[in-house]
Image (cartoon, rainbow, N blue to C red; front, side, top):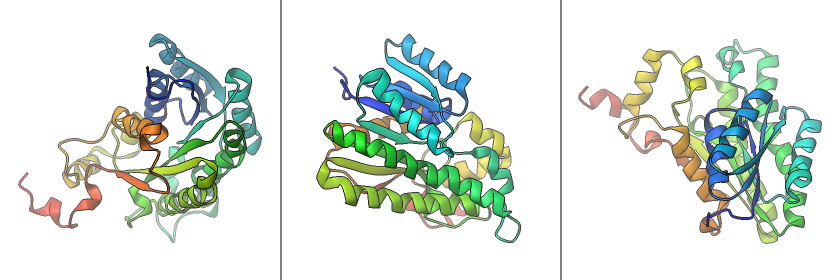
Length: 263
């Protein structure tokens, strides 16, 4: 028996990377999974990978910046599986990162798009999922956040600000709905070795990330999926309102650490 037997889950951004790994992990643990993504073909490939391991999943097109898409995504859980218990708000628009430069250069459009996807999207996911969770006995939500929401950096101010807002939203959802049986946590990531990460971050910068982690390598989507699955399961039923740093120890040390270790 899996830790999520009988549960119905939605994963946004499920076409690739962390979302794909999480969708497969939740299905392996017994959940029926709605794989939602703006990349319909990628979501369908994730659905196939779930079927390959004997799991149950269905791909749906969803742009989390569009409230009608989110409503349809949530309804797909009911139409296909009859309930909704779990939500992983994971989708993000990494294509906008190239425009997320610095405070004096970023366009209002790039700022707004980042907030629309990274913060408004999870809000709308919660808005439409929570009533159904309440109707089916409660549930659990995990938001994909970032260490960029806790510390400053030389670029990506919109991204970091959106994730700081998402951390606050996480605590608000946990506070408002905890007594009604809904838990909400976030996983704050650092560098996760995905194809998308390598597309937007130059190799010389990736080596800087590697030096600043306390682990021997960058994180993998599968490792992150393990943490998300735990936070969505009843094994973590006394954990809510928390921002769990899944960051390879990045925020655990003095900033000068990487300059002092032998190379």
